[in-house]
Image 1 (spheres, rainbow, N blue to C red):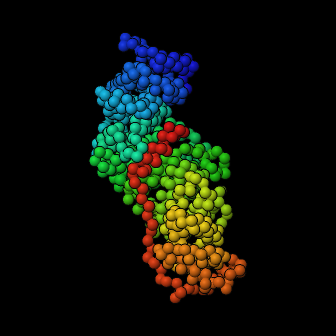
Image 2: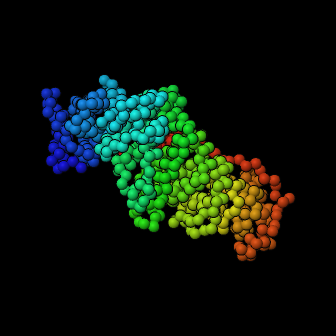
Length: 586
């Protein structure tokens, strides 16, 4: 925080700005305002939304002067690289913070658009703020050898990784703070996208011009080099990490993912950010991104499940990293094809399911579900789910089984909880279970019981002919059919619970639609074949079941077809805007 004297002077300047006209010859006012030591918290607390509204409505001349002076400071620092002294650094930093405060609020006023685009203010602010993200002294310590790759100046990248293989220079904390402030400004510059729209004038500049790609690669490289565990993975070493680096990664990933879903003037193909993400081809680069994503998500899980309380810092990056994983899975086919063959790929389930069990925002639940669905479209991933689970999540009952059981138990708990955040994701969870059902070799008693509980729950609701519940029953019948026809020996507990609920199966068979008739017929035939065994204990049934077969009774297994879910960029952009600009995420 700034000291008490500077805060008092800053407050006086703000009050003067919103309550009286600043004369053209008041040359001392602007320099004294911008040379004060201040923080983002100072600016946000002292410049209220009402103050900005009054500035635009009643003191528009002051507002335009404030814009012009702030943008001028950014341009001077961007163009006069070698003359940056401590006073100029302070002035530029304050200009960034003031613009980041007033711009998103000013977008709410219709008159602001004409003021913003007059005299090319918008273009000048965007170009200078992006340029400052890669300006010597202000945000980078670049080497003298300037090398370019597809228009990217490699020496100006923040960290090594994509494109840049040589080690980049380490920078002190003040530079990370300035990077974070500039990324925050960029985030608010692109907040002018109207809901239900796919772009804006500001966003078009970011996604059609090549100069922002330098920032895209810098943010991704910073994530690659982040290492959330600290030096040598020692306990408590994670606390040595720069807090402003963490903030810069968080805001930077938000900006990159937001721009990825935007649609330019010539359609999505004209989006350079999307093309850059889809164009990452080298195996080493994709592995580096995968490892960085996995490490951050695992560190969040470890921080809450470690034997040494507080030994792992809980970095608040999991939501942004999940969105990046979603983006890579959606946009980069090579990324998904590569990671499903990684031996440690299955380890990503624990942190993702842990995040889901915390019942986060509905948007994050959808992201997690979509990622797992995309994984489940690949047979290699489904086969790896047969790996035994050595431990379980704290919020789940103890069980002995595999990763497939872990998925089913987690999803069924989320569905049956009827929480508003996860309630709209029920069909996504069931889709993922349906995709893995033909490949799982065994089902543990708890997951078998949970599948039948889900069928009970949705079948009762489906009698009211509610379309979502009817669709859920169809998927559940397909799941049970897959287990019975493809993994008969491993489905003994599922068949046991079918027998225990045989009356429900008969009722479902009577009301089933033509599309789900095949699946409900299979369930009824199984019940008929074992109805004389109803009432015996679960373990006794399992022993007898292993010696039986329904070959000749059941129809031949149908061809395995994975269910696919698609999300439109426009819908994702709208969700991102609502989530990242809501109070608490700003």
